[in-house]
Image (tube, rainbow, N blue to C red):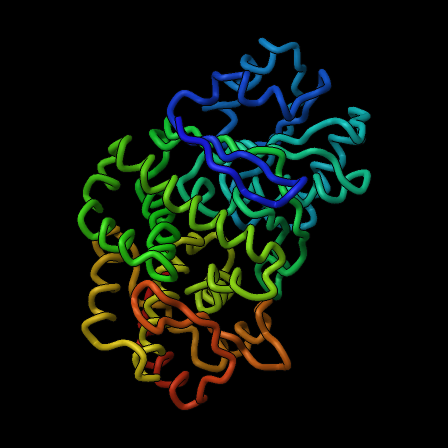
Length: 364
């Protein structure tokens, strides 16, 4: 097992990464001072891991209240969020009752937002069961829900007490979900870690084959990168925005295609290719760099062609992005592989060219 720390002063917390961690009660015990906890999970994860976690908690005399939600990005909304509040109120959960998120990014985001807002804040534990959640959404304290007009537009910054990333849970992950997580792994190499990008080029086959050692290395390296960024800029006033490489385009794809039709990592992959194309048009990277990036995403089994929503629709959806400032869409672009920047002054003609070049007729 490896343990990293997100350094946020009094709110610092550990990230435990390894195999068989769901059964190690001693890792959870510091964040469970009381004898009750609520586990928020979904209909896919519950049959796989809920009873295992409840058994672990019983070993330290903690009674777990299960809250099982429908599975899917399309349920990441206020209606489903209220199901969490309903269960917490029905069971008279108190301000000292921790919420444990057991699942992927959707569960983590919703449980985290519920924890931030129920009784104005209760303790929160992340147990991510997808690669995407283990390397990205479970770390850093971003929580929230979607709105019909935009993804993750309603939420709060609320840090967990700890993150427990059990690599064994990836054994039950569908191949397309594994690939979706790899999209976020590639992102770290592109924005700030060229040696990691090069490692991914050499080891993509091992990741796809679910080699435990390779997965643990990739998860730990990704979490280390994110922890450093979050420690420097918790509320995304500067450097943390770089973590959104591919997300401005990607969120537009997810929203435009209908939540759940494209996985988040799939949208990020196609969106990152669009960001790379735009970076090339600005003269920052070369065609060989774009081809290299595209090749790695293709090897990971990810889409590199975005759906043709129409330039007008893309601009409308990107105009609702959280990074819009002064009415201008801000893009995370590449100065080179391993160095990203935030750019708020992209010539409209170049953006139109990227939308025309990178979009194709792709079925949802």
